[in-house]
Amino acid sequence: MTMTDPTTAAHASVAAPRVAFPPGFAWGSATAAYQIEGAAAEDGRTPSIWDAFAKTPGKVLNGDTGDVAVDHYHRFREDVRLMADLGLTSYRFSLSWPRIQPTGRGPAVERGLDFYRALVDTLLEHGISPVATLYHWDLPQDLEEAGGWPVRETAYRFAEYAALAGAALGDRVPVWTTLNEPWCSAFLGYGSGVHAPGRTNPADALKAAHHLNLGHGLAVGALREVLPASAKIAVSLNLHLVRPLTDTPEDREAARRIEAVGNRIWTGPMFKGGYDEDLKADTAHIVDWDELVRPGDEAEIGRPIDLLGLNYYNPTIVSAPSDNAETAEAARNDGHGDSEFSCWPGSEDVVFHLANDDVTAMGWPIDATGLTDSLVGMHRDFGLPLLVTENGAAFEDEVGPDGEVDDPERVRYVELHLQAVADAIAAGADVRGYYVWSFLDNFEWAYGYSKRFGVVHVDYDTQKRTPKTSARWYAEVIRRGGLA
Image (cartoon, rainbow, N blue to C red):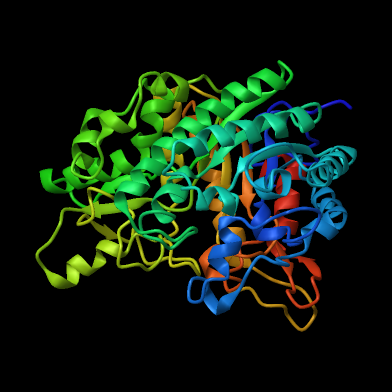
């Protein structure tokens, strides 16, 4: 079967756009397995850390779980037809590790792989290029019980899983992403505990970060062994666009600290040869880096990749620690959930601020300039072709009396951010695609089903899909190849 690369695929234009995007620009949308698939115990799948976390009382709003989610496992053909109707040229989805390799060890379960074979074949039949993400936070629970990401062995198990998935699907998937937002996996999962597996140990969070990095590097090597030479490998990072509240030395120092543990903990070893000394100094009282990082690890992590994905939602505004009790309370106002434990090990007392009062239903400020600045900075610093692998917003969507879902706020949000992408391209950044988050309303992690990010509305009782105004608007953008 012929593969189409979303970074080179052509699309048709029906009208001259005011803001045109480059020929071959990938127009996509994205999802994650646990958020949409359901079928949590079918065809050999075993629990992931999110299954266990969601079933722990008090961890997820309203006790919601992904057991059924939006039933994509059984409705994927309907969903792909919707994608085709909207004109998507690419679709980014994640593979469920416990669906393919239930215990995180040993051979693959063919029934699990068959689901993804059928999904990918259906996408290709509709002219939609697949982008597969190996890890979007659903570690097999068996591996968590053996220690999880803070344990080095998990990185090797991840590479084994990558080889299984790549060997099975590499003949039809042209782009592979190793990790999605490893910062969240490490620091929300093992630091603040607001994500699965819900641990609150800063040393474990830093160990998890290193082993996620190592797992990425090992997976790149494993994929290179089984994928065609034409396949491209990426990683998707939620790099924080960090800005100091003021230009004082104290606020600039706060920004340096957050940028180190938010961004450079990934980009240092992946692209610059190793962990930066200031990051290690900031966290030396928490973890022994000389013991954690073994000889050869940083070279393994730094294996070359072909594309770099950015997940962007809002900028991060910070200031120095404060003795003022009210100001200090804002230290947890970082947009990453409510916890008495910090997701910023070594910089727990840095204070976070909203960029403005124009916020989404998540309470996240809308500031598209941060997307432009991030893309231009990534182009300058890393020199890799870029994909915006997630960008979108939750709003209080409602089905109208006519059965339609009008979401002008989301249209505005996506338009602002596509303009920001165009501005980055005009400034020289090599941006090759944009994936709106998310294709479908779905299980929004610890928020359960209370937050809707989709451009397609889902009635969770009936599973009826209804494209929102934003979906139809995005379809027109795709058809004309740019903004009107």
